[in-house]
Every structure is written in C-alpha cells, then in structure tokens.
Length: 142
Length: 321
Image (cartoon, rainbow over all chains, first blue to last red; front, side, top):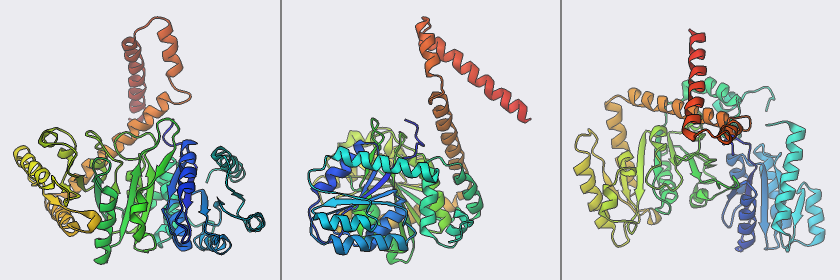
C-alpha cells in the first residue's frame, strides 16, 4: 500500500441530544474496513462543531447519524455551517430513523442520499466509494 | 475567495480551511505542498513543538487536551496533530483522538488535525512533521504532536518535536521495563499519568532511579512528573517541565539541535519515498521473483540490486557536479 495514496476521509457525526451511537460506530467501523479514514465526533455535537471539525480535518464526506427525530431542524443547520466555512463541497449523507417524506425532502436539499435501518454497511461503503470516484473524475485531484 | 489566491497567502491571513487543505496535500504526497511551504518558510520555526508519546491507553489524548486547555488559559494558541494507526490490511483507520479533545472544538485559538499513520512504522504519519510545519507557519504558539500508542521502539517523534514527553501509567510493567533501552531514552520529560491509581508512586520511583542511574552524562536531567490528566491534576507541572526543557535547549543552541533534526527529517523522507518507488507498482518485485525462480539466493539478488541502485546514485551526483 503506497503511503501517499489518496484516502477517502469521512466524518461520522452525531448531531444534537440523541445519545444512541451504536449505529454510528458500526458504520464508522465498516467504512474503516473499506479502507477509509474515519473521524468519529462522539455524542452530542452542535452543528457548528460538526462543521468546524469537518473543516479542520478537510474531510470529503460528512455522515450524520440521528435517531432523535430532530433531523429536519439539525441537518439543514449542519449544511449551512459547512457552507459558512467554505466546506460546501463535501459529500453529505446520513442515516437513522428518518421518515420517507423527510428523507426525500432532505435529499432534495443536498443530502445526496440517506440510509434507513437495515441498510447493509456494505451498501453505504460502496455508495460513498462510487460517489467519490465520480467526483474525483469530474474535478480532477484537489 | 479569489480563485488565484495561493494556500500560502490564505494561511498568512489566517484561513483555517486553507491550513486544512495544506495538511491534506502533505498527507497525499501532493507536489504542490513543497511550493506552498517554501513560500511560508520564513514563518516556520516560531512555535514550540511538543511530542507526546507512550504506550496505548496511558492517556496521551487526555493529556494533550489538558495541555491545550492550560495553554489557552494563558492565551497561547495551540495546534494539535494526533496520529492513530492505519490498518495494515485495508489501509483504513478510525481516528478517535479528538473525542477526548471535544472541549476545544469551537475555540478559534485551537486547531486539531487527526492523521492516520498510513503505513509508517515509527509512531507518526509520514506527513506529521510537514503538518507541524504548516501549523507553525499558521502561527500557533504551541504545537502538540501526539503519536500512535507506541511499544518500545517507535522514535520518529524524536526528530519531529522540540520536547518529547513520554506518558506512562501504573500497572504496565515493573522496574525492569524502566531499565530497558528504548522509549525512556527519547524522553525529555517523563509523565506518570493516572497518578491516582495504585502503583503510581512505585513507577515514579523506578523511573527516577532509571533516569538518575542511566542518564548521568546528559546535561538535561529528565524530570519525572506525576499527573492525572483525567482529573486535571499535574498539567501545570508537565508544562513547567516542558518550559524548563525549552529554556535548556535554547540556552545550549537551539539552531544546531533543530538542524540536526531537519537532517533526519530529510533522510526519513528520502528513504521512505525511495523505498516506495523501488517497491511500488513499477518496482523491483517482479524482477526479484524472476531471479528467485532462476535459483539465485535472496542475498545474491539483494547485493546485485543494491549495486545497481548505488551506481545510479553515484552517476547522478557526478552529473550534478
């Protein structure tokens, strides 16, 4: 493995007051096992903090995990905070307990794809890898 | 943000996203990094770089967070680079150091970057020293460089830091461990963390004895500091030991010490990249396979390859003359 190979860097974040992170940790471990560099924020993160961490770590992907029901309030705020820091280009995704209608609404806002319960981790990893390959092809290496 | 503005220019005016991108370039071996850093080079060298190393689970991240907290209370800005291991099989990594540094996230005087070791075996990532250069150029007063949890023989931090703090904790070995060659010898400051646990005093005494018996010929007497980073005890003492070490190095010729470390940095960088080129996709592996199949011994093959490489290098240096 060449040491300077471009790696996909992912921030797995838990916004808001929801205290359940087994899902986030499972996804984080699965992405690691697919060769990605995964930064996990820990629980109870404010949207500002998530965006700030994404900026400092220069991640390619931000994945939000939420089971509290506050996604319609928190997801758009994370997106706005990212844009404020010049991080509007990151691939935004997420998952958790999110009703279908809300998923569609958030996906339309720029959350490219959201994943619900029962999604195989393999599917998430493959989706991220494909989306990143697509981006790098279009942009050239950053 | 003008498209034409360089990262170096953006860093000079305090753009944190530019700093983050610059570190990514260093990590990815992007050729543009060297040019940007050259533009920033006059700004590099003002920060004091503190390496924090030690076995896994001794509380390095917690101590780094504490050191940052106290430095901030003294209105000194802090750049942090924290390295965690990459998987040797998938190349992936879970970077969890900043979970312990959560309180610092929104402080504009702190910048934290997590880094995966990416196949480097010396306790750091290859780009860690470059990341410190970038943090230094940005203007942080103190840089904290946390290694992966190390065993007894990972010393890259020695060449990347001005002061090396080795963090140990009780319950991980007896006096004999303290006598072994290795990690202890690279320490400028020894910290017995989790000092509220049983066995801490004993460990501190063993270390003091080891230090006093073995390092008698050194000009710097390595202090052994007790701390409990999880409960914010002893952090000031650790910083005090670091600043005494700094005063010692500065009075005995900082430039010479740093130059020596820079030479090592260049040496590491060249040999690692050379090795990658020699054994990468278009490298020598298939040739070695062929030679082995022809019945040559590994020693003979190695000698022949080495002769070729050496000849290549001497031709190059002749051409330069």
